[in-house]
Amino acid sequence: MQVYGLVGNPVGHSLSPPMHEAAYEELGVDARYVTFEPEPSALADAISGADALGIAGLNVTIPFKQDVLELVDPDPLAERIGAVNTVVFDDGAEDSTPKEDSTPKGYNTDAAGVTRAFERHGVELDGGDAVVVGAGGAGRAAAFALADAGASVHIANRTAEKAEELAGVVPGATGGGLDSLDRIRDASVLVNATSVGMEAPDETPVPAEYLHGDLAVLDAVYTPIETRLLREAADAGAVTIDGAWMLLLQGVEAFELWTGLDAPVEVMNDALRDHLTA
Ligand code: NAP
Image 1 (cartoon, rainbow, N blue to C red):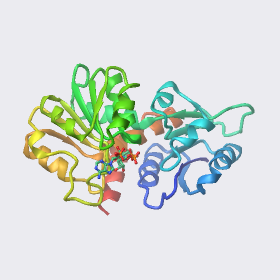
Image 2 (image 1 turned 30 degrees about the vertical axis):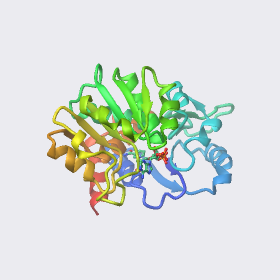
Image 3 (image 1 turned 120 degrees about the vertical axis):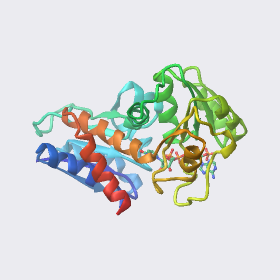
Image 4 (image 1 turned 90 degrees about the vertical axis):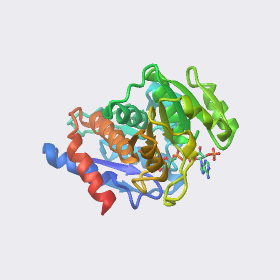
């Protein structure tokens, strides 16, 4: 049996176990997905311990996504983003025997979660004009993902310096404060990568007057599943993509990295949405 898991603190309400275990069941993969909550100071021990125990792969979440970068061999995208959310210990091989001198590989599948969510909704990113609101972990992943997919990216963040700093490393990007959100008027793609709207359905990071019918809007927030931003975007005639799509598709990418199999996306989506509304 293979063991996969999630390392974070806290991880109590994670939706990843039911999503991944539904995929194992569907494909007959002999595996379990469990959550681990190490103390922040114990991350290095947790990663080497997981390796020694023959754990096949880990997702990594807050507060460890940046620190784990130093403990793995990151792929170039994860290195540019500066965060790893997926660790592969054995390159997905069936053989769970620990190998000597095998530094675990690190990936950032949040980026693929963003691009695959737009693709899934028929949104063309190449040549598009994107605005990313937020310059934290999700904002960094979104900005690199959209730029690599061929969009021009503007990053707007409450702390303008963080957006400007990020824009300095994302190809062709510009950055500014929230006063630059009026760029949305001419944009084709919008990502909310702030936590605004999470658990507070009456909050939105974007004034409704900037939303329009030629826009596709992805909200990374998935609790609640229908945020005020998405409601107002739908009212303006925009394509709307909820945060569960990003969550699903980063998980799909991780599943495929770990197992080498095509993920049963619909089954994983159903399991995720069942638990989101439960
Ligand atoms: P993070 O690194 O802590 O970044 C938080 C971002 O939100 C920063 O840009 C911060 O701006 C901004 N922000 C916070 N409060 C704000 C406010 N009141 N007004 C304006 N901006 C505010 O967090 P993260 O990991 O990027 O996560 C951000 C959101 O994305 C969370 O809701 C998280 O659940 C979601 N997420 C979803 C997925 C998914 O798969 N769907 C994946 C990752 C994250 P400052 O820099 O000015 O503080």
